[in-house]
Length: 389
Ligand SMILES: Nc1ncnc2c1ncn2[C@@H]1O[C@H](COP(=O)(O)OP(=O)(O)OP(=O)(O)O)[C@@H](O)[C@H]1O
Ligand SMILES: [Mg+2]
Image (cartoon, rainbow, N blue to C red; front, side, top):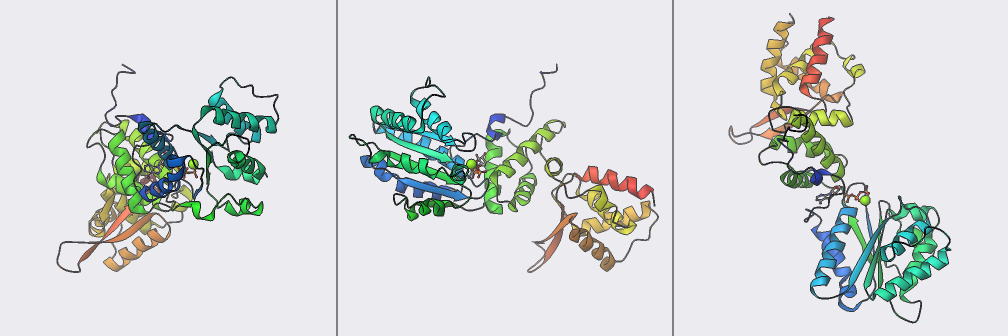
């Protein structure tokens, strides 16, 4: 009974979790290609390389690196080239010995967590790599945390594994950071790090976010269980940040909200509810600044948009006339109504956009969208307020 309810929308919830790495990272082909080019010498003749990955929050730095390393291991395995890697998150392991410990435990899970100096641990780590006979890649994710603490020396010491000792090892590094930390390294004259090896991750555009969300929905949700304009709305809402994590989180929350209803489909209304869970610009106090005419106009928008992502201004104006009647108010002329709509947009309640239509060349229609609150929730609030007038 309680656990019987089969999910109607979500097919594979793990694919919505933040640490799931898809096989294919859309719109990161250029970054993957550049990394493959950089690491060519490591694969071909056991050279060593360093890459810096930089870009703002949620631009796929960690996911791309995980995909890249896993793909590279697969490729090498097929050609019998020994290659191994470890990814250390410097925020979670924020001390030098913590980072070295994770590296050593990759080879020796029983290595004790105390009792060894940094120098001893460095030697142990190098010995393990040498003994394994494998090309080794160390990924330091969120490396800015480490560098800000002044641990530039650790990065330097590890980078010197290649030259130290009688037997050569192949150690490469991938350093990841939101900020451009290369200048911090340059200060300490780390000549082994080359400027050219920077791989930039730009913020995702609105259309790229659309593709990412569409792909994730296809992997995680049942067929035909999300409206196209719900995906559009998620992309619109995430554009400001260019952040894929934000977009996927919104998809995940929207799907869970929709799961609790019975229609079996994610609509734009679910996306607004999800966005409201995360952040809503429409607070009660902002509503209270609106007069009766503007409240009625906003109510008309809510009632005509229902579960859709957008509604045409013409449709809203028709509903507006009906709502005015209901509240015994004279409906204003078109120009005045339009002033109300413009005002509502200025206050951040709605967004308007112009869309081409099929009614001959150059003709267009204005669409109104409600960004981050379910139309039903907002309608209820406004109705309660209109009672007071
Ligand atoms: N191109 C993409 N295709 C599919 N999913 C992606 C893509 N880029 C990022 N993601 C997903 O978005 C989320 C955030 O990506 P990731 O963790 O790689 O960002 P990041 O750049 O490392 O961010 P931060 O700086 O906060 O660590 C992850 O769940 C990841 O799987
Ligand atoms: Mg990351």
